[in-house]
Amino acid sequence: MSSLQYATPASVQEAVALLAKAEGKARILAGGTDLLVQMRAGMVDPALIVDIKKIPGLRTVTREGGGYRIGAAVAGAELSDRADISKDWPGVVEAFDLIGSTQIQGRASLGGNLCNASPAADSVPALVAAGAKATVAGPGGTRIVPVEEIPTGPGRTSLKPGEFIVDFVLPAKAAGTGDAYLRLIPRTEMDIAVVGVGVCLTLDAAGVCTAARVALGAVAPTVLLVPDAAKALVGSRLDEAALQKLDAAAQAACRPINDKRGTIAYRTKVAGVLARRAALIAADRARTN
Amino acid sequence: MAKHHVTTTINGESVEFLCDTRQTLLDVLRDELELTGSKEGCASGDCGACSVLVDGRLVCSCLVLGVEAEGKSIETIEGMAKGDKLHPLQQKFLEHAALQCGICTPGFLVAAKALLDSNPNPTETEVRYWLAGNLCRCTGYDKIIRAVLDAAAEMRGETHG
Image (cartoon, rainbow over the protein chains, first blue to last red):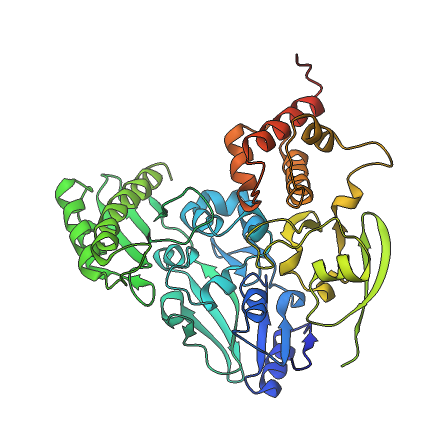
């Protein structure tokens, strides 16, 4: 077991410099609910832990331009405590809140859930459906990246060496917009999604869908943004014909694994069912928004 | 490397300790500070036996580094009874026989107290969901849930038969 350094940079620039110096042997610590487990299991053996929680903004939620800027290390319980964001983006908050136990919620972060890059990460389809963007800092400066472009496969991300996520921006919500996230697990708590579906849609005054984003989790190596599923909804009043098209488009996008928690056929079928249900919940929320 | 010198507050008292980066808060509590009430069950955040509060948030101390305790306020099971006087939750766990081997009990008590501090009148469903991250492998959950609900009623000042 090598000696392990620990640093608490006070700024993004300081963190970037530490990561550059560590030449790939550093790991970011936010909530630690994945990192500490992986270290104990011997899956990772970093030389440096960079605790990003002292960097200003990393643990705060601020309103910005009608939307929200959420620090990458904000814990699930901290986000759930915010009445404003829970009202504006209930799908995102509920998806984040589904991760782990009360204890895990006390620490787990959106940045960690995304960068751990599990195909079944609950918060990710909800963020993608909401159109969230991540602020990525690194040696080349800062870039803004749509959340769906971060994961590239199980445990892999598009972050370049020395880069880390600083925060997420949820956009200002157009009038008549609602979001929802549903997942299937065989028990009621403490499990990993067999399928997860995030939907965000906008209805006009006549109840016609004018915009939609549909994202699927746990049915492919990464989260899937499914434009065909969104197209099935746009222009409709979410009648049965539109929901059938949505169901079919969601199923067509699935490329799931076959494992003890769900067969390919089961995961595919459930993706269609959850897409329908999430769309109806999002539509209800859109009408009351 | 040199050990970290950490200053923190545990159950209201200022505490200093030395630790390696790899030591978790649970390791520090048990091995450096002789606060052995918090238990190591799984060491992976699944069982809740190591539950403590950090700055008022319920967490698994096995998933917090000891060095992260710097400047924080930690509450452990050792701070729950006031001298010889048990907390109502502790008393109700005894009355309802809500424990057998006792390994999970400190975690259940700390987690249940965190719930009642924020929600004095939880439903049974709320208690069950809140405590879903605390595993018990011998008593089972019914007695534990009943003890928590009974303690909540007593703390609200409601009499019962």
